[in-house]
Image (cartoon, rainbow, N blue to C red; front, side, top):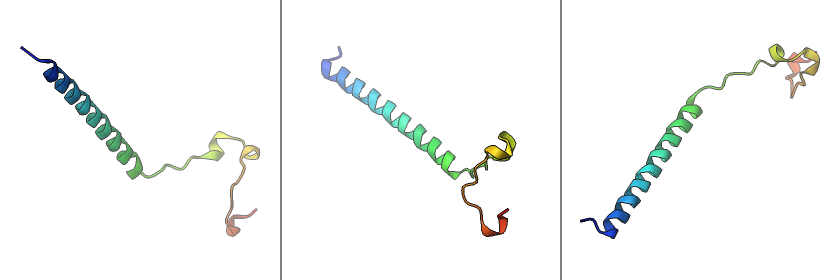
Length: 63
């Protein structure tokens, strides 16, 4: 017959295993996202030229 302490220990172990699983999935997802090279966002294709605000242009590309 199970005692109350056994149930509490089983519940604690189950919650700890769930927390570890969620942490591992989070870390693996974060690492896979960090290691991937960012894809440049093509602003000229999405918006008309008048709506694009240049942040900072190098001197050789000034109009």
